[in-house]
Image (cartoon, rainbow, N blue to C red; front, side, top):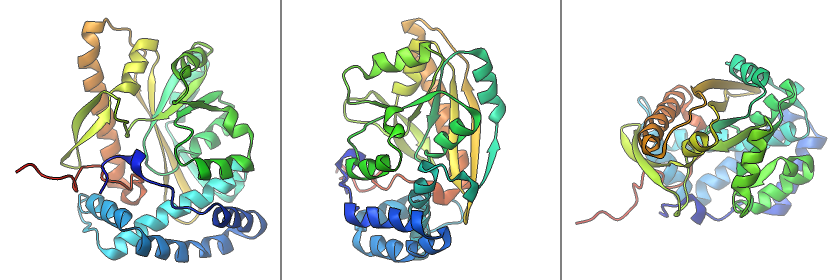
Length: 301
């Protein structure tokens, strides 16, 4: 199994994805969700690397074994959040029961007039960040690799062209400059901190009792730009229920270069701890379907 998420090819067919979007927008959510069962069955049968990644993850959760039924449920949860993106992107939040925990951290940051980093992970639906922003009139940008999963991104952007305007493409040479400009203007910049590319500086931590690598970049950026970091995850709880969890991870901290390394390590450890907490609480919301812990990597003899 490939160790890098960047090596994974898109499995979705654009025509099929557009059909699912059409069904979602022109029929009931109940009818649309019926399609999730054959979709789950298809991906379970046709994606051995997804099954393996799911099994290797689920067996790390106390009380779970990574059985075929649990793997199928894991894939179903992921498929459900993809379907619900259609509704979030078209402002149909009324279809959902969304409970927000820790909103006071966002409100306090807004009141300060200063920017911050909203740091998430591939837990649940990152699209809920947009729901939160709309409901609370938050000015925000999303830092991401725009070309990864380009086909699905293009289809979803067609549902709401304004979404593309909120994205800062990490592949852009001026990405860090744009991000800094947004932060200085008082915007919140959302990003995911649980994946890295080959060129990133990474640090190894224990996640679910196994070593895993995390990028040092997000916390390093926060120290360089002197802005606070707020942890965010929007978890799917079944049916039409979601929960948004918001926690203050760090205050704005200005450090010398010599102080930075130890601070980044300690703060990233705190971030990893919060990921583990929510994975144990919502185990079917982990959507890193690749060899995250390098279980399939060749072992040195």
